Image (tube, rainbow, N blue to C red; front, side, top):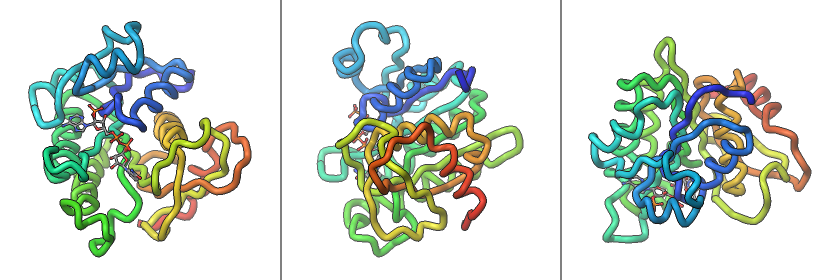
Length: 237
Ligand SMILES: NC(=O)c1ccc[n+]([C@@H]2O[C@H](COP(=O)([O-])OP(=O)(O)OC[C@H]3O[C@@H](n4cnc5c(N)ncnc54)[C@H](OP(=O)(O)O)[C@@H]3O)[C@@H](O)[C@H]2O)c1
């Protein structure tokens, strides 16, 4: 085992969140799941995780407080549904929800926050911003995570994946990690976003790093450690 703490996965029943739970289990890491629906969680993971569930919304402070209790690290893979006008807007989930989760996690003693954000969050003219300024909202969420967890004794890692796909198992592609939001486009399997988020728990070069990630060639990988090392050596803010 590479990490000894307890990790809370926010958005654990989401498509990336499910993979994060599976990769934590793969590495034998203790996890708790923050989910909106206990029923969906049980359907997804089976009854063995029932005592690890914390049910609630990032919109509710008391539910967030209950979820972050006793966690050492948080991996957040939540995201609003921008295509559904009935769903809360990105300002409520990707900005305020992330800010609330980060603030309450820090107040509760969480020392490490890992956030799944998105490529292009620094580009106001990106077409996705037509949907509730989703990328701008994500950037504000990121900013708060950097502010809170960039302080002494804490640590953050922010992942900005390209377009998410579900085509292959984890660790079957080489990666391109970059900083400074310079990649125009690219795609990546959700399972590899999850793998990188989980490895960020223990890889030293992932400390206080914000980076973009997309996949490249089909080629088996043992881990993504070398990409963290390369990107850290060539960091652009
Ligand atoms: N789609 C792309 O190509 C793309 C590209 C780059 C980055 N991203 C970002 O990557 C992240 C993961 O994407 P994904 O496709 O895996 O997302 P997803 O499948 O839509 O999952 C989103 C998760 O957020 C949860 N959630 C939504 N509102 C919530 C609330 N109020 N309280 C607590 N949880 C809430 C959902 O809960 P339920 O399970 O109950 O629905 C779900 O688990 C998102 O932030 C997304 O914006 C996506």
